[in-house]
Image (spheres, rainbow, N blue to C red):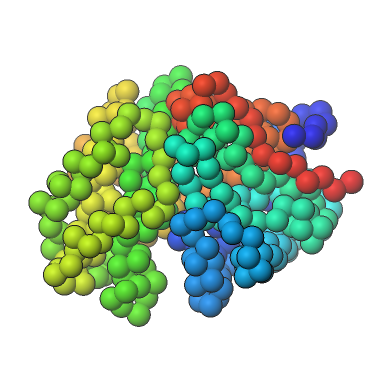
Length: 368
């Protein structure tokens, strides 16, 4: 990656389109890749239903180079440019006051055991559209070196945790759920625990008029099948040692086991399963966390949060309990990682992705 110059304080916009593929979160922060000097505004730019459907159609395989695929990638990038402009407007500054963009792109396929991870998005086009230098393709270097390529947010979690009593666990519940456990001295262990909201989102979309189970209402009216959950937890992924990671659709085959359940019981079972996966992962942590801080869309699901509190032997709170914005935190993480990558600092580690040594990563599209 090209040198971004001497390490200094940068104003960075981070962008995140998660595995739910419902829109772009954008957040601004000021950092030198180590310290977090200031958190700026955050915005959300939802995807129209038609575009979301076209984007979801790309998932589950590497990009095929077809004209429709290229058209979706271009539109995705332009929607990210719109998100950049929205957060800059919210900050009340000009674009030339922003030093860098961290552009995660959209994960469409993640198979690190095969040496493949695919986040689509055109970093060069985003730089041209915004007039701001862009770091993108954060995961490929780690995967090429034998790592899982995920999760990557732990470096940011460690920076945030400096003000907290540790050990502490950050739990991000997007389409996939992942945990970052942070020791008293700032060391980290991270891994994907299992599905987050992906399975229950797809179930809700199939059985209701919503694309997710709003507030867990459907699950609340059902009863979880604990025998089915126990059978799923006996699967090979949960026997693997951390670090480890998942594709959004890894557990889609589990849905066939739900045939015959009511929509409410299916939602209750899938929601409880996501929480049970987190509890199953506790055995891999070096010591019990004093607190679980939950970020991502799953923290809005009241049934999910209740299940986590029931299954985990520690306080479980949304990150807002310590003054952070859980809707912005993943976008902030990729702003932070962009600064680290631009200065050649590591963004992944042996205990977070399983890579042999700390690795930097990313591709820089620089605007003079």
